[in-house]
Every structure is written in structure tokens, then in C-alpha cells.
Length: 338
Image 1 (cartoon, helix red, strand yellow):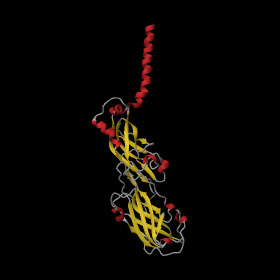
Image 2 (cartoon, helix red, strand yellow; image 1 turned 90 degrees about the horizontal axis):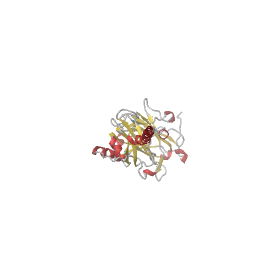
Image 3 (cartoon, one colour; image 1 turned 120 degrees about the vertical axis):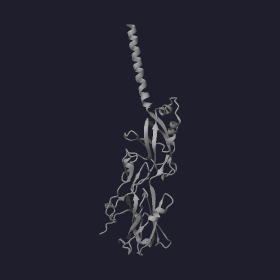
Image 4 (tube, one colour; image 1 turned 180 degrees about the vertical axis):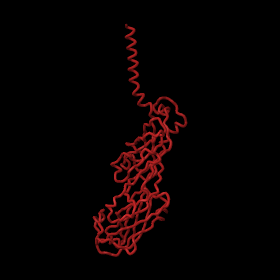
């Protein structure tokens, strides 16, 4: 009898010991700790003290499993420059970008994401502008109006693998990784973010600028969709509608320059044609009817730039109309043309 009791106690102890160890083993058995380090210097996003500012709230590392299962994310949040993430054993493609596809409140009214489970098809799209809010502008048939996107940058790698031995090594198991595994462990420490948004600077040199109460612009031909993995834009043009929000006068207080800068997804990959159209309301509230439409083909200006910014410069004359521009005159407003 005593022998039976001892055997039962030994069996219970072994069973209990196994139950105690398994959760710890299961928790770490299939996920490796992967170091991450990000260079933001080519992202177009302000990199000064980035880890301590609100320019980037978090970074998504989106993993696309080779077996076709749903993509999943790992995040850097408290420090968006470097950190460590836990990744399951498997083979993946990876896209890294600022914020998250699930940050709907942040991206709302600016950017939407499509094909989020496809490495090649995963894309960011500029949200459509409502023509009803732009009553001073009559879009052409099938013309796509878009709003200004928010800053966006990405990086990608087509193959990334986590092996069981990488799990053991990064969890302090004492194993030794081979050269390929050691290189893979360093892959995400060489992330250099590339810009997906480009600043468009529009400048209008105007004779008798003081006569203008409002100047609205339509910059046509820019991309509205960019693929996150390749950073390539789609061959489909769209139009940014904007109002000039700054002006600088000559000493005479009449002539001057009006300016506006906005973000876009930039140039098309081919067959590039860009134009700028302006609409002016004078200080007496009238829609200005110029003898020649205020329209310019600015293709060469857009394509000639060497830097990341896109600079557009035009000039035109207004008649002198006596009046005074107040600060409130530059607020956005809707003017219905009768």
C-alpha cells in the first residue's frame, strides 16, 4: 500500500511539474526577440528629437506571412527610433511605416489604406475631396479631387525569416546561430525610411495683389495612391484644391507674392502632365474675369526640380481696386457663384 501511495505521489508531482513549466516554455518557444533601429533622415518627417516629439506617434512593422495567412503588426511606441519586437517563427515580407492602419482617428479625412493583407497590393490613398465644399471650382468630367494627405514614410524587405534557433539564441538558450540567421537578426536594424509624401510649394507673383481678397488654386496631375512596399505611385492623376494662405507685399503695398504649401503623393511614374489654375475674388467681392484664363501648364517646373520639394511659380496682373484686406479675409470660406 505504501508503495502504491508513493507511486501516485510521484506521478502527481511529475504531472504538476509539467504543468508549471509548459506555460513558460510555450510563451517563448515560437517567438524570437528581434532588434529594430530606424533612420528617419530621408523620410521627409522632421527627425530632430524624433523620439521625444509628436511627429510620429508610433511605428508599425507589418508582417506578411509567406504561407498566405493574415498580416499582423508589431509596434515601436515609446521610442520610434529603436527597440525590440517579438516575432513568431516563420517566413515573411515586411513593411515598416509611421502610425498604423488601425489609427482611424489619426488618418481620417486624409488617408485610407487598401489591400492591407497583401504585401505588393498594400496601398495608401489620399481621401477624396468633396466638390460641394469647393463651389468656386467646377471639376471636369471624371476629374478626381483630393485633400492634403498627412506625412507618410515607409521601408520594406521582401524576405525575412525567423527560425527556431533564432528563438533560442535571442531567449538566452545558449544555442549558436549560423551566419544567415545572424544576418537576419540584424536586418531590421538597418531600416532607412523613404518619403511617400512630397511638399508642393506654389508661388504666384501678382501685380496689384492688394486687389485680391481670395485666391484659390487647383494643382492638377499629382498621384493619389502609393504602394507601401515599393513606394511606387499609381498612374492615375488627381487635383489638389487649395487657397493661398500667405502673402508678402512690395514696398508700395500693392504688388506682391501669394504662397501656399501642401503635401502630396508626388509625381506620376510616366505620361506626366501638370497644370495650375487660379480663381480670384477681388476686395469688392467680385469674381475676377481675366481676359486670358488664369491657367498654366507647369509640367516642366514640376519635373525639373532636383530636390524632393516640388516648386511652382506663376505670375499675373490684377487691376488696382481700392480696398483693405483684413486678417479675417484669409480665412477659408465658401463663396457661391451666382
